[in-house]
Image (cartoon, helix red, strand yellow):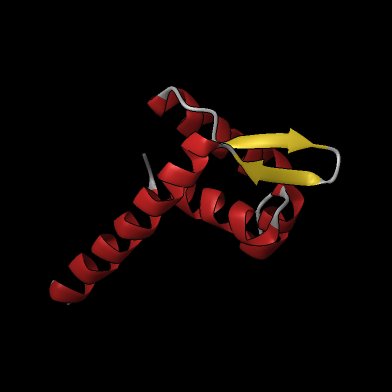
Length: 83
């Protein structure tokens, strides 16, 4: 799991679309999609229900969302502690 994958996941949750996440992160739609797919493969999870209007979290995605928020908090705190 990389910080880019987590950022792509969280931006997709925030915007409700992969395209919205791509725009927010200044990445291509394909890049965001690939990062999310790799995250899903790594953990053997389906994080989003994909539909024509965007995406919504699966139950697994909801649990991963809580984990991702905690991971970002820990990651940010760790970086601050070494500055």
